[in-house]
Length: 147
Length: 402
Image 1 (cartoon, rainbow over the protein chains, first blue to last red):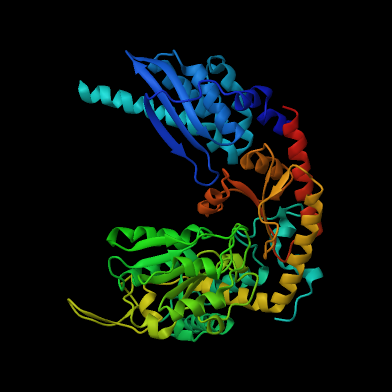
Image 2 (image 1 turned 90 degrees about the vertical axis):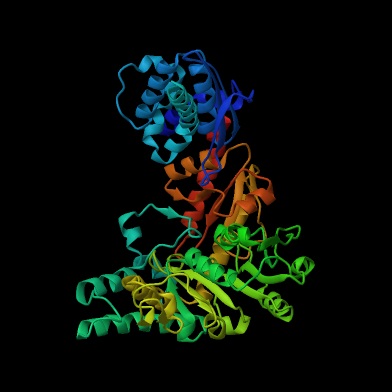
């Protein structure tokens, strides 16, 4: 059960049972759904002047899915868009089991490292991160069009 | 094939040789494959793997004969005529073809009646044609979430033209009392499209006895290969329908702007079909006959009773279908998301399904965000059930620590 304890860490279950940044305020959002297991997550972000001012989430799913949305919202709120994009890529690479340059900036999200041993759960751990990536990309695409 | 002893049945499945500790309880998703099926398909590829219905040479004749023999085998198995058996990709694709063809015979304002117990394949094709004015209705289920004739009667209107209904539910394990339902539907002039994918692995289908108009099933849930299924239609109905797909082999005479198509079933099979898979399906039918539905049902019933008795002792297990007819246990563990539980089961080599099981209307009806489903087939053993029970206990104690 060592792997299992690696997958389900106290911090994950804590965010699952007491999620942070839960509840949407009406910012630009992305809704993602995993039809096979029922994970259903909406992530929103307030993006201003190249900064991810605030990230929130709402939805239902397993502990990995819901807790990762909470951890991500806490971690990326207040980061610059560029830094947020880099951290998101780092996170995806970590989940795939690849080495990353600066693991420390993933902070609490590092606990999802164990997911790499559970390929069937990668989708759970990344669905909210993918949603935020879509929101940010959508927003920055919009900027480009405006230019 | 000779009659198969249940004690020996695992020997027929190479996957158990290669994975001795594998506790496979996801049989409602697909069955494991016996070596006789794999060998029959290899035999085709290794010894006469050429195209059918085309070549004027001995080997092509052999392949064509094996393919058409497979059709006859299926026909006899479900008590149909050969010309009423159409090979397709799987039950989903068969139902799509049937529904698209029938939709062309309907008019705007006609109703199709279905049930919340359906697999997505039985209803989504009808949602797809709703845009042309065909209206999809649902019956109410009874308090056990079963389909009843009375609830069907309550939703039939003068505009109801088709009843799209499952023979057995892939999540609740209920067998539909289909004979009475079809007989009533026919009194009202309603055609019945039956999804038999979940029924045929466990019980005899006799299309003449139940008098269904159309029916579909997949080979892969009944020991056969993936990639092939069957749709059945009464011949006098099939011959009035225009095929969905057009191309090679389904025609008699092609001119620049007009083509004479073949008679059923050939007009519905264009392009090179899944030849090895048809041969594999025929072998799977022989295998089912050698095991016998009586033995299949006996094993499943015994294991289901055993599982129920064990699960009753665990208070955090919620079973949604305690009165199931098939060996399907649809359940949740209190305060544990099904997907989290499935990972613990995986750790115990227990394979089961977590989520909506391609029947999300059932989750909606139950008011749950997904469930766990353990589904039994004839090669399962008490050890498989014990592993399931251990997995449940471990899941409960594991998540209690937080």
